[in-house]
Length: 97
Image (cartoon, rainbow, N blue to C red; front, top):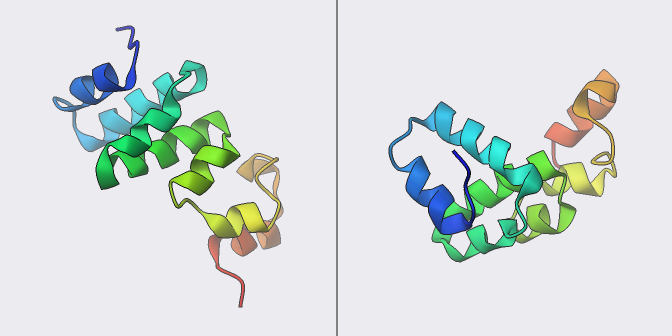
């Protein structure tokens, strides 16, 4: 299934379970040009925008969706989580004190 825009994405998600929804968003996000349009669809759209931003490594979208600021603040978003040391992974999971 080829999804052209955000409205088609949201319509296709209605019939899926949560896990399949996340998979569909993750498959759509890297090539989508209108990811930010998800922000116009309320709280649900913001959560999907966060997922799309994380998959596409779109820092502006993550910030706009109210995403994981500790991860961005730590400057660790440029590397994959598997490349981080266990100390750095813990640092991204907790807000600074």
